[in-house]
Amino acid sequence: LTVPSWLEFVEKMQQIYDECHLIKDGETATYIPQLAQQDPNKWGLAICTVDGQRVSFGDAKLPFCFQAISKAFNYAILASEIGTDKVHSYVGQEPSGRFFNEICLDKNNKPHNPMVNSGAIVVTSLIKQESHVSDRFNYVLDQYKKLAAGEYVGFNNAVFLSERDVADRNCALAYLMKHCKCFPETTLSITDILDFYSQLCSLETNCESLSVMAATLANGGVCPLTSEKCVANRACRDVLSLMYSCGMYDYSGQFAFHVGLPAKSGVSGALMVVIPNLMGICMWSPPLDAMGNSVRGVEFCKKMVEKFKFHNYDTL
Ligand code: GLN
Image (cartoon, rainbow, N blue to C red):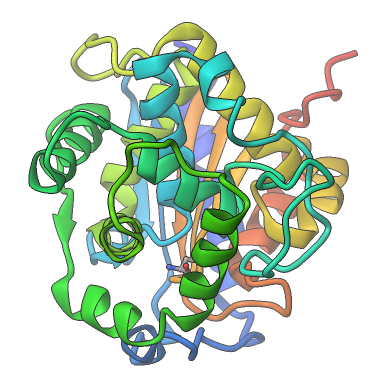
């Protein structure tokens, strides 16, 4: 048993969940029309420990899209496939200090890191480069399912179509990167790359399944429910490092300071937190703060580290 008293732990987490339910701040993302339709009252949370204990509260079975959370998994999948060094010949490791979809590159004319749109678009272009787009999509979907122990991973075509409709900024970013030779030489068309990127943002899951995926990262890349190796050791370490420094948009430094855990958020209001060697936590509540992070999700994390010594430097 990893958590000393599971029942006591569950009770306290439920309490924090209830407290956060009262928060009514934040705005649901509107720049992707389909996301604007999400119900702001939804609030779900699920936990899966590295030894497979599970608990969930509220809307933990309702589907939502990965959005930017896909960036973390796409990176982990690619780094497992071709190795971290190769990945980082295309993209850096530095927080950008800018909004996630800012049209800018670092001083080497490369994307700042794989967790902002620029870096994520390049990472997407590198996955299974020899394969047809259809096989690339299937490959990533299979990897996601493996990480989730075969639990729910689907595709929301309405969100994809909606996102593709408003992809002008990502398109501008992709052409800037093409100009700066950020993509591999033999690559898909910009349209195919952007479609693939948006399709992966439009994959959907729920809190319960995403907590299993997070637990797989907490467990060094081995899924705690199936014992299957999903992410290479080095890739697992590296994705957690990037989530720690860049996973919460322009709030990443503050989140690392206050909460001290690797995390990744998405504009659907989902938030995945990894407590290495202990558990994966997934939260979902659509209203976002000015940085684009789920208001309830961030508040939950802050309250959680007040109650439990989960901060990376709590145990010194
Ligand atoms: N699909 C979104 C975009 O590219 C993902 C962004 C997000 O969740 N931050 O704008």
